[in-house]
Length: 432
Ligand SMILES: CC(=O)N[C@H]1[C@@H](OP(=O)(O)OP(=O)(O)OC[C@H]2O[C@@H](n3ccc(=O)[nH]c3=O)[C@H](O)[C@@H]2O)O[C@H](CO)[C@@H](O)[C@@H]1O
Ligand SMILES: C=C(OP(=O)(O)O)C(=O)O
Image 1: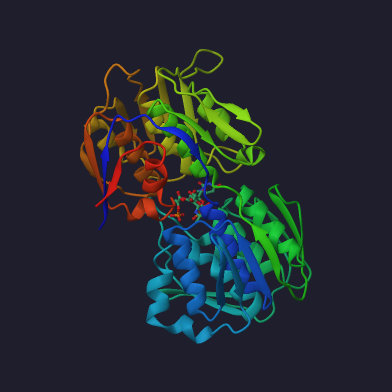
Image 2: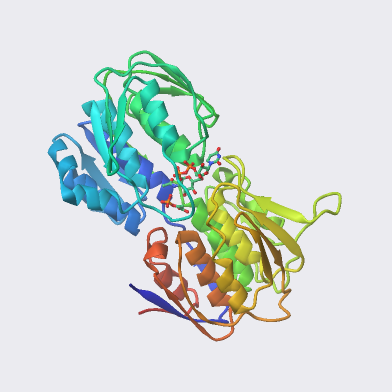
């Protein structure tokens, strides 16, 4: 288990270039299975989850060629389905959440698929019903034997379906299964994050016929075959949000480059409502060093609440970052994590560091900003999940004294060389 040792209290200054989007990458990489022709992908983040998925594709027989710093070519012309029965597949696929999206493409192209219970953050119950109910609607059979989920369907047929929830990976999976089904599939209550918009764009460039992209109503006219393509990943909006919060907490002047600002939805405004100033300079976000930032109230004077919602609502993956950012703000905010029930428990570490937070219940925490009256103090802690991990890193960077964060594999799942990149602009983080 690796750790970070952080010397707190340094201000950072400089430019950060966001990595390619983790959750987009996981969808896009699974989609390479849909064709036997070459698919070239650019801006692939060099992070644990993505590298594990690329590894898994290689094991499945996909030809994987690294053609540049963050570009790869994939050719899925000789997929070895026997590998699905191996112990190595069970172990590797269970290591990340995104592997579940191998099922849709396998079902579409090879008429069957198999996956162990996927991994990912332990942030509460993470059901997969939406995926399998969707596959069943398309005519597939589904079995779960306690270890593996199995799907089979010789002849998928287009259908109208109303998803039981706007699941991100569920929508991607069902969409990828439907692109080569016979006839028209309509998916209502579809998730529509930029990740899914990008996936749809890529699939259309492979010959699929998807309309309604960006909305919660997708219409898919099935085609018999998909061909190769080239695709570039968007910058990671969760990383961009993490950098905005980090700049505020550490009083740092930071420019985040090439953010594709129109794709960030409500994210910048949510941080602005915490009082954080930022300027859009072309496609860069400039955050000045700010000693104080005042949390807004609602128009009627009521206390600010930040809660998650399916896109275009505020993403649950940035709530932990908003929470830690509020710790040194002036004012009070209620953080309401509606989707996941175990994602706020990391606040006990922040409280130990000196933050004023009341955990009201597993879904809600009230942060009373310290307004820089008192710095947090460095402690030893462990990273429970990706976003809590980065929130603790932000807290440690802002704190007085040294901190150690254990279990940083969690952070490495989603943030590319975070220590090196932050050290380059003035942080002091040592990987132990
Ligand atoms: C690999 C990947 O892409 N992971 C992301 C994906 O996970 P994932 O696709 O696994 O998450 P889902 O969108 O399926 O659901 C997340 C949670 O939210 C609940 N839920 C979902 C939709 C909804 O309308 N109402 C609702 O309550 C679900 O019951 C579940 O507890 O989406 C999550 C929600 O944005 C993100 O946190 C994850 O980073
Ligand atoms: C919850 C997350 O990831 P995963 O779904 O891969 O666990 C995340 O990226 O914040």
